[in-house]
Amino acid sequence: PVVSFNDRPPEEKASVYRQCGNVAFGRGDIVDAEQYYHKALEWLPDEPHLLSNLAACALASTPAQPARALGLLDRLLTNHPNHIKGRLRAGRCCVMLARLEAALEHFEAAEAAAKSDASESAEAVFAQNGTEISVEAAGNVPAIDDSVGGAAGSDSWHERALEQAKEGLVSVRRLFTQIERCTALANAGRCNMALELANEVKQKCVDATLGSVLVVRSLEGGGRLAEARAEAEACLSLHATDGPMRLTFARVLARSGQVSEADQMLTLLLQIQPNYAAAEVALSGLREAMKMKGEGNAAYSRGEYDAAEGAYSAAMSADTADMLNPILLGNRAQAKLQSGRAVGALVDCNQALEYDASNVKLLLRRAACRVALESTEQARRDYELVLKLQPDNPTATQRLCELPVPKMEGESSEEAEQVLEMDPYKELGVCNDASYTEIRKAFREKALKLHPDKYSGEERDEAEEKFQRVKKAAAILTDKWKRWQLDEGFASMDDLVTQFKADAEFAYYATTAPQGYTRDVEDDRRYNPFKKPSKEFDMNPLRHNPEIQRQNQLQFMQQNRLGGGPPIQLMDKSSQSKPKIKA
Image 1 (cartoon, rainbow, N blue to C red):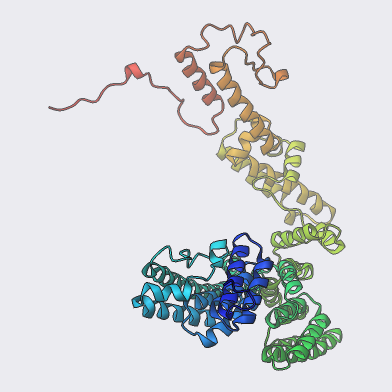
Image 2 (cartoon, rainbow, N blue to C red):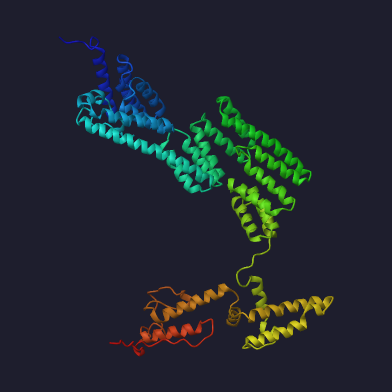
């Protein structure tokens, strides 16, 4: 006789719903699969395969829900602690939630269970795992049981389970190592390497804030405070009640100068989690440091710079969570600078900029310290960096204009103009082919005659000007390079380089250019296939003669030599004597 569905035993009813759920899961319909599994649970509550399949649906949903899956798996493992697949899935859920200690326990339990069950019969294994779906086969995680239905033996299934348990252990232990290394690198200021490790942790712990906290810490260690704040805000939009992320964001806000917002963030965090010890320490230290900072500001306004420095130092000691370090270091640097200790002020500025490398106020303060130490080039770089960050910053623009003009290598533009205005040979009264000895002798005579110490009043000023002109003339003529540059008529290094390149290009094309190329200035030495060759150049029958090429190269090298020495001679290969080989 035909038995109706309602009259069948609960096990058969649950089996039907479970099979329907498996079919729905196989075609990717996660919602229908969950409904079927819940109906099956009504007939068989706490059935391990159904709980494991519901956890698989939670992991396969978009986005994944590892917290809900872990709740179902905890319910399963309470009654079946040696359920291998449940242990493996629980370990993966714990990794996604950054509960690494619990993940380590689950993978170790799965490894032990796989080893102990390896000797069981294939029938017993099939009874435990044969009707259970595998979310891993859907592509979320590596497959554990792709032998659903008993296509493969129990030994191969246990081998795969044991292998994946070991892989899980290795992955979790590697995560511990990455977190430790990332923290050490961030504290050392090695931002890029720390960021690489932090992003790897973030990709594995996708449903937790641990990776984002490490990313923020790495960015802070590299002085990229603006990027750290953006990362913290993005993470808080997904995990608004997470304690570590809120504490991290409060620290970033305080270091950015938004102290009141950081105070509110910590206060709200303690209302949500009253027993959060780290937040209590950070909030108490922040308020105490702000109180001492106010005392330091009052002392600074009174001109008591030593007292202000002491107050800022005490505030840094009270701020155990380093919430205000860049601000307090900057204030202490200003107090030291006002009291005449520019070196100590520069050290504090450098330490503060390690927290926030793009802080305009700190960059201006460091530039002022460098100006006080007469490091004008370094100060110039700081002002230029400020203008790069804030193009309309008036302070940086004004201070940059007040700095002296930098001197270029060799001769400055001002000296080059003076050289063009005067004739060094006439200033010293020597001829153009005067030797080094003659130039030095003429300079000594002029220097003794025009030395300013021999004059007074207006005559001294006039003698000073003439003495400086004679001194510069001697400096030019006694320098071989500058004298050659003067004799050749080059006003600057750019003119020299331009002419030298033009001569070199002419020498090359004069001997090697094929028909169609031209050395005419109006054509800018570019290829013109429609231009008729010139009679004096392109139609030269000796253009490709190797001997002519060598002679032209020799002539060019002789004309552009900068130093003395014997004439350059190109050796004839036919005249070179071959070495004699002894028998």
